[in-house]
Length: 156
Length: 254
Image 1 (cartoon, rainbow over the protein chains, first blue to last red):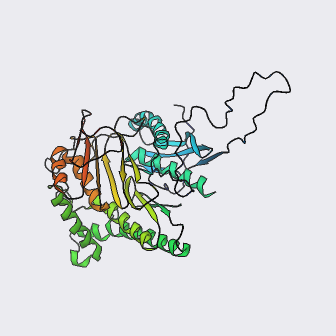
Image 2: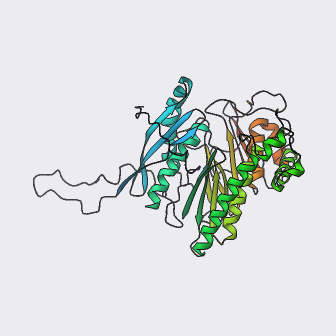
C-alpha cells in the first residue's frame, strides 16, 4: 500500500478502544444495509446515454460525504492514525493519515496487517455488530484511531 | 448514543451509552465518575508506574493491608479466576511478583459500566482495548464481532449477548506469542485466538487469558465454570469450544 507521509505528532495517544458502530441514532447501527455494490454518491441509473443538454438529472440528493482523521494512536511498535470517509452514514474508505514504526520488522508486519485491518473495519460494518472483541497492538491502535474518527463524525 | 473514549491503562476504554429517558445531568455525572474509576484503577494497579501501590507491593515495600482496599478485592477475584481456570490464569506464577494485570482492565471497565447503569441509562457498552462489557437491551441482542487470527477479511465470528454480559478475546496473531505459559515459563503456543463469554467482565478477561495460554485444557476448566463459555482457534486453524458455546455467525463451533 502507498504510505502516507510520516507524521510525528504530539497528540495524546488514542481515543476509543472498540469499533462500536452505533451511530447517533438510537436503536440502529450504521450498518444494517447489505454490502453496497456502488457508492451512494454514484447514480446507478438505467437512463439512456446522455444525448445533449436534456440528459436526465438525478433528482435524489447526493449522500453527504464526511471525512475525519482519528487521533494519533500509539502502540508498542510505533504509532498511527487513520482517516475515515463516511458517505451516507456508511464507512466507505479508510486511509492511513500517519504511520511511524519503530523498526523494520514492524514495518513488515504492518505492511501485512494494515490492509487487512482496513478490510476488517469494512467487514465489521457489514456484519452489523455493536463492538469487536479482541485486539492487540497494531489492530488495537488502528481501532482506537478509527473510533476516534467515528466519534468526531458522530459528534458533529 | 453517547460515546466517551478515555485513554487510560495503556489502552483506550470506550463507553457507548444509550440513555434517552435518563436525566442527562445524572448521566454526565456518572460518566465523570466512570472516568475517575478508570484512572484510579490505573493509579493503583499500574505495573509501569514504580510508585503505584501494586508496584510497591510487588517489590515488597508495603503489605497488602497498606494497599487501597481494591487491591485485596482484585486479588480475591484473581484467586477466583485462578481456580475457575484450573490454574491457567495465575498472577502469582509470574516472575517479578503478583501481577493481576490480566483482569484489572476488565475489572475497572466493569466498575465504570456500573456507574453508568446506576445513573439510569437504558443500555450501555464498555470496551477496554477489545474486552467488551454490556448491559441493557439496545433493541436487539448485543452483537460482538471476534477479531480473526487469519481470516482478517472478515471476523472470525460474531457472538450475541442478551442484556448484561462480557466478551473478551485474547490472541496473538500479529506479533507471535506474547503470553507466558505458567506451566513451562515459555511463550504460549496452544492457541492463536481465545474468546470467553460470561457474566462478569473481570473474570471473562482473566479466563480469556487463561484460555489463550491453556488451550483445550483450559477449555475443560471453563466448561465446568457456571455461566462461562469459551472458544479457541488453534494454530492449525481448527477450533474448540465449551458445550454451551454459540456463535451467531462465523465459524461453526467445533
